[in-house]
Length: 296
Image 1 (cartoon, helix red, strand yellow):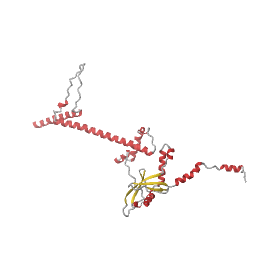
Image 2 (spheres, one colour):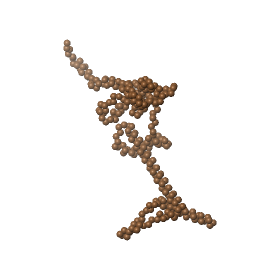
Image 3 (tube, one colour):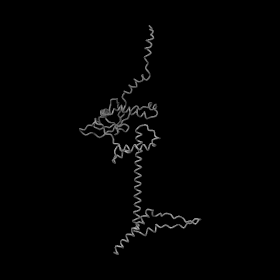
Image 4 (cartoon, one colour):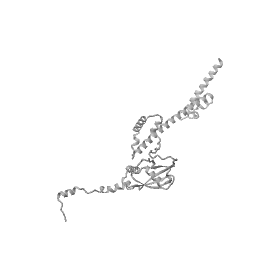
């Protein structure tokens, strides 16, 4: 039996909006995200790969425990999990870490549609198998593993020579304010790339200062050694160098009667010639002093 709805009932019926496509698809997608994801563990010593299922609640410590349960030969070995060159600590939620890393990689890409279409079905994790634990020694999973020490780069190297952190920040602020032109043509996708470029510029500036200082020091050392050699030669061999110092005008005349300019000495440099003259004068003074001592 057909019942006709009143206008009030029709209004109430229209007030209930039909579910949209996004709301319909939200449930299955959320359930898909809650499903465990496949994880392929590759061992460094050449053992066969191991496939595991990781849920949202699993930490790196739980994954290590699963590996030891499946591979009894690794019970007494120290295990370290590495992903993309990063050492994973035991308290890290592996599922959340991998999901956030993939989302971060998608954001830095320019074509979001192509990235969303191509998604890796499995995730690869490297497992470094360490030496066996001694008797009575247990791997302290409650304590996070020590991160690798990164060498100081850029102006951070100045801390080793006594500069404070405030001085280093002041140097860095002034340097990058004056070198802002080096960033105009560069488009950095992430903050890590910007920091890497900034540290590279600081390294280049410090290296250029070191090279300039060493070049000036070597030049000063070479010039002083040249003068010293000239003084010694002029003192012990006062007359021999003068045969090489003197320069004769070449027998060349131009049509207007002017003479050719004499060329500079190619045997002794100007500093060496100055040293020879000083050594010759010191020799004369030393001889006069000896003569006066003998006569007195």
